[in-house]
Length: 335
Image (cartoon, rainbow, N blue to C red):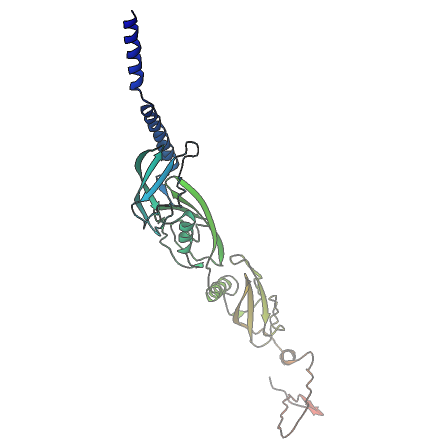
């Protein structure tokens, strides 16, 4: 019986001795190495456009992690991006050391050489300071995709077509920059160039000719426009002779034709557009010489004569012209 008990104890000891502390430790280490590896797979992105913050130890288990990039021109072993444009895949090797054991593996990471802000700036940079032509708008940069819209497609469409407005107009271009499902929003304002001053003048003159001054020969009061709806422009008028045509279009006819220049100034945004029209106020019918004479006197009469002051005068021949209707005796007048 004792012999049997001795043999039983010996067998138990031998079995216990087979599971050495070293073997127990190796199994536990393998589990922790795999746990660190799994943690890394959740921490390291498969694509990046920003420098990577590569961990060098597990926050709870500890251990050491070493990194080695295969292509330093794309990504340094420290996680710093060195690629300056476009995108490229790079192999990033790592070795986990834990309690005397190691585990090695690698990641294949797609590196983008530009950030969201870089791409947003590139998209904006393809436009001049002022839009004055059609654009073939580029919407892909360094692996990124851009979707954009114009706040006023009538003057600058979402296909990049430019339609010249009457005046300079400010629009907003709103765009999204997308990379692998991540989207960031951007926008900027830009001026769309309107008509030149000469083009505005041409349109205004045509509008006035078509609607208000169809004929140069004037026989009745004029309706001079004071506002242009198309340009949102007030218009001020001046006449070369207000006694014949006033600034509001009232006319005075004489027994002879009167040649008048009408000058208009349209205030379009912050600039004055000036234009002139030459017209003839047609002669009116008169029946007597007295009416003709009175009309002539009215035509040449001045309300007042300006005062001239000479500070010096010498060796100058001056001729004064006048109409001597009466000189002590009646003078003949021919009309």
